[in-house]
Image (cartoon, rainbow, N blue to C red):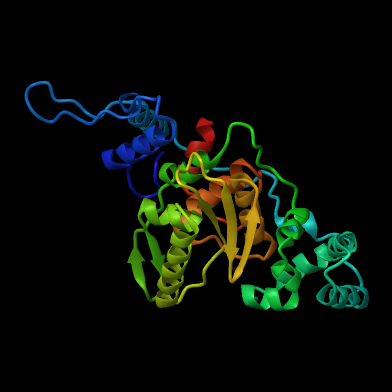
Length: 313
């Protein structure tokens, strides 16, 4: 739980502990966090599983240092995995025209989509100026209600349903809080954990709240003149009972059957379309990339909090 560039505070431990109790009412909050006692002769620091774990990790880092993945390690990239057996240009163009014109039968769509995958990924990787809007224009099938299955067919799934669910994914940004972000010509700013959560996985109680939040999100990014990156949306009365899961990018929305399927789809959209991780959720997505997908790219920066958390799991 060591943040890149700053420390976690008691307020962070308290917030995480309260979320855990909200989802698991039979648990005692004192097991996870007990506030510090600052008065009288028996003063003490905060106690509980969360601060204890955090302090142990910090001590370990100071004593041994945090080892990053060595440069000699085998580096794997999406480009290495998918750019094989490129089709001749004419054949690729003919298949692309077909895929622009037809949406059924779906078995044939999938067959042609799979054939064109290496060329498509190569195209996305080569042209870094491609926007999501450009990609959707060239490949309108992404807008299809089953478009998420085209994303999933490009990369193998790595996230297991076993032992991981809505709460785990929603709490990830609290364990990997964002660092200070420095943007050329715009100064620096430090996103809050709440902003990191909303960027990675937006939680709302109902469809009305969902639309309001999305409108606010759109206005915020337009004001900042930043593109809206793909994100997961969780809808339900509580996190524990949520039943509706979506992935939103540009004006395309996919409905998935679980939060893990949504996270899987969101992650793959970013990589298939060669997008960058949103700054607020960079640490969270880098953890998912390294821990679940074992995907190591040559030019990426891996925050200390990510390597530290992975080493403890």
